[in-house]
Amino acid sequence: MDSKLQHVAIIMDGNGRWAKERNRPRQYGHQKGAENILTISQELNNRGVKYLTLYAFSTENWGRPQLEVNYLTKDLPFIIYNKFKSHLEKKNMRFFVSGRTDGIPGKTLQLLRDLEEDSKNNEGLEVVFAYNYGGRVEIIDAVNKIIGKGIKEVDERILREHFFAPHVPDVDLLIRPGGETRLSNFLLWQTAYSEIYFSDLYWPDFNEEALDLAIKYFENRNRRFGKIEDEK
Image (cartoon, rainbow, N blue to C red; front, side, top):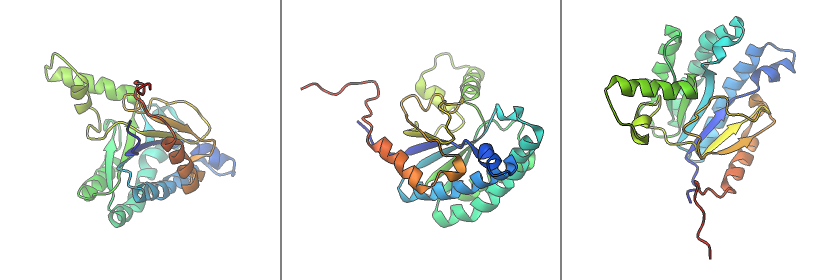
């Protein structure tokens, strides 16, 4: 039984509703949510967690109102870049972009790639930014890459090698703030045996104390991965 927490994934939900309750535009909620990434990633880094995958922008999010899409694909990445550049260096953390690059504005992709390149030699927590990401799309793209290489027989290892972030292990703990209780097409393969923790807090309010509750929940789980313990 492996109870060590190595990979946390978070669906950063509730930014828009958080802003609406404060009579502010949805974009303000996304900005505050981006700032909260610094808080949570630093806390996980301090705890020795190796990977944090964040659901930042999904392949389905293109269907949101154009004003919000423009903010998420053009303005928000600049906020992430400006806040994360020094943060990654000071905390010895890495950054990695996971998702389809098609459709992402060139300047946005370059900013994210710059963060990735500048931090690649750091040794702390790796922040995996799931951007223009969808779990089904990831599997379909992997299959098409494999077909393109003429590979006739596929196993789990080969499939994983063609995912967006093949070096990242399966998720140990998936956290979803915001009050919803679904996966929303996030890391469908990698969460097969994840512990899942739901919180009614909106993402901008999900602080260190809330994270501690989620981790304690994980630590109290008996992870059997489909097996059973030896009967006495």
